[in-house]
Length: 394
Ligand SMILES: C[S@@+](CC[C@H](N)C(=O)[O-])C[C@H]1O[C@@H](n2cnc3c(N)ncnc32)[C@H](O)[C@@H]1O
Ligand code: SF4
Image (cartoon, rainbow, N blue to C red; front, side, top):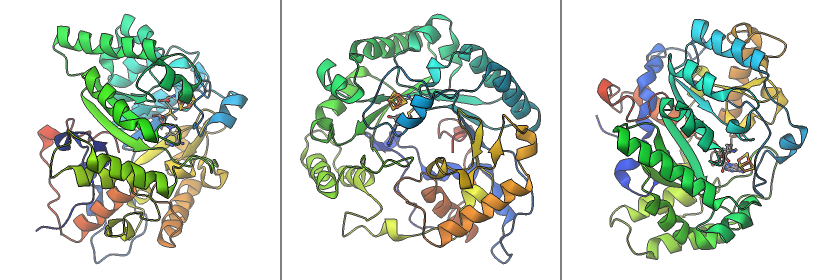
């Protein structure tokens, strides 16, 4: 059994640090759909990974942020609602992982986030996507060590370049917070949280991303990966242009210090877009047969205003919301006729080619699930690598 596994989910600086797409096989749910059977929803699974965005408020104003309009409205989950959601998840829909996310900035939520990190970490793995400005509070109260991972974007390599992108003079505080966390980990011998630095390439940084990479590497975090920003949530002016992608591609290919034999994979993973900028690269034209992510109920996203969604690229489109936790309990939404309808709608939409694959982190997972269903790859992964492969976070 061998077939070419799609590119990893991350463009990590070092190949062994890449987060592989095979982790999706840990759910084991694809076995519900043998090849000779029609694909229809036969049962309701709990979400494997929940993205929970507590607030639209933020400590900065990144020019690329796809959430600026929402930030202005300032919606947030109340503590009462958070209690209800966390209890519902724990008791009736237990996930393997919860990602505290935004935008806004999850650490800027006015409720007691440390308390919920502690509660959630008792029944699943918890990760956070944070801009890093307010991590000091979580370092001081110890809740930082309850996190499985913290991913912090790198927007520049010094004070000035940072400010140009996020509008605030925050380079120093983020750098200090990152070093504090890494020192605590060293002193306590703890693996957690995994500290990931995400070097963010956008129209203002694409020329500078090599110094940004070097800075990120110098911090000594667990992983450094690179990502091009996208036109998420209705914004249409964020994506770097094809010429800029080509510039990034060539800069990587010619930069000193990359591991030989890996640099091309890294560069391709980084710059691919929906239009497949690299002529020789055919892999983005492979489409999954179904949106397994939706069908197998792998993901649940709860937005700041309480809306519940099934995938990231559709979270600005009310048409794809399965309901709102401020009106209906999560346990009533999940598995409801509306939920099942949206799953079918997403599946049909993907099949008729309307998903922008450059924005969807799930399509590569869907391809792996297709391969597993066809018996083209080994579907059993070592249990003892579940956490190291980031199995809870799909
Ligand atoms: C929306 S933010 C929320 C968490 C936190 N405020 C932060 O900035 O990390 C989550 C991640 O998405 C990234 N992000 C924001 N807008 C984006 C866009 N248009 N395309 C790609 N990533 C984006 C951020 O840089 C960050 O790494
Ligand atoms: S820190 Fe995050 S949420 Fe805040 S403006 Fe920047 S990307 Fe958006």
